[in-house]
Length: 295
Image (cartoon, rainbow, N blue to C red):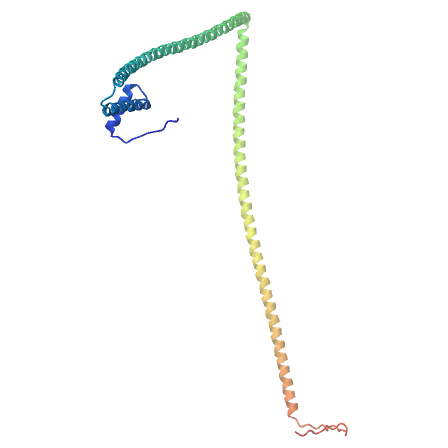
């Protein structure tokens, strides 16, 4: 049968006391509650049945002894548990200390190993440098021997040429004269270079002046052409105005002439209308007579 949850509202003091009793009994909350319920039932039986039998008293006596033994065993178990936990904690501390010492020793050994590797590498590099330096010294020694031999040969040659010192001095004087001549020639060339540079600057300045003059002349020509174009446009407009004026004058004269002719014709027509008519009336035939219409 599945367990069910049971709860009740109590004061904080009672709750703390129950928690403490459950903790001291070493039982779970369920077992403590079942035992408390059994004790309560036994108490009820003791109160309600005043005439209980000796068997019940014996059972109660044994139950109390069993209960006391059980509580003693539980307390001993709790003490053993505390001692075991304390011993376990001490062993854990000792184990941690040993582990830390081992890790420290391992780290120290690794550092010593790395240091030894570095020292070995430095020694190998130093040995290699020393070997290379020895080889280089051997080569330098051989080269110096060759140089000493060459110097000895040169010394022999110089000793053999001591007798021709005067010729060498003359040769030095000639070389000195040639060097002086070369210096004068270089100075002359430098002066010519300066002259050429000055001439080039003057030519460049002249070219720039000519360019400016050309630009100014071009601007003047442009201005003259613009003025001539404006004058030609003005003359053309003037001619067009004169031609328009002439056409207008001719048109005005023609209009006046036409008006004069119109006036003359009007006067002649007026005179003709005012003059007596001397023309015979036309003969009207019988058939051509118009019929009189009476209104």
